[in-house]
Length: 307
Ligand SMILES: Cc1cc2nc3c(=O)[nH]c(=O)nc-3n(C[C@H](O)[C@H](O)[C@H](O)COP(=O)(O)OP(=O)(O)OC[C@H]3O[C@@H](n4cnc5c(N)ncnc54)[C@H](O)[C@@H]3O)c2cc1C
Figure (spheres, rainbow, N blue to C red):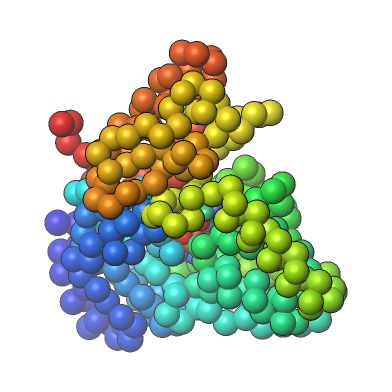
């Protein structure tokens, strides 16, 4: 029990936000998979967040950040570390000319709507990515060649000691689906530098990318988006298709027949089903193509016991 009494102590320290205990992660993640999270904390403001980081520090408890849970594969055995979610108090969008200061708990779709309404261009290619701004920045989310990090000028970040600092774009270390931020550094806000455009034109571009997604991705079934990163020069989906694993199943988990880099949950898939498919794909692609596929999806929670 790594959270022994943590929730009680945090409340006693004056935490005002919401606290949930024993939450099935299958209700939270886009994959609809995952056992119970012992504790999810929804701080309302900076003071709440500082209470959480101070208590975790004092009790030597590691914590994890949770966005919308759209890039996560959570163990069937659940998560013992407290999860911190910023979507109940860190969702402000402030506009200063063509700059936007955006709270990390803001949904990316909400941010894109704001851009269209305010005729700000640059983020259209990210239309349809279902995460939060914090999760998007942490993952350097991107599509069709654009990445969120290209439009960020700086971040406001809180460290485990509760200190807040401004990190300039060039210090974030944005790379392919990642940054060099420490896992316990909490992104509070991103500053985006955008360009002036025409509202209807921006909306049209967003709609075109959404249509393209609907045609090429299995959006009607639960998933965590792309399972693997694309190796240099060749899409992971193409490799998986070429080694004949499109449509392969383990339990209710299936390699999508529409896009082979998606594993979809057809109803009651378990983490171990997905892990079984991941192993099979990595082995087969390595044997037949000599390429080691790296995971894009993040695996969290108590390690699965061998079957
Ligand atoms: C249908 C579908 C399509 C997708 N398409 C794409 C795509 O085109 N391109 C793409 O890049 N991704 C895609 N994804 C994956 C996913 O949406 C992105 O990675 C997204 O950025 C994750 O955001 P999230 O808020 O859900 O983060 P989560 O999945 O909850 O977390 C992801 C990581 O971010 C960290 N994190 C979350 N919030 C913070 C914070 N405030 N501070 C610090 N760290 C934080 C978490 O600890 C974790 O390490 C897709 C997913 C789905 C389901």
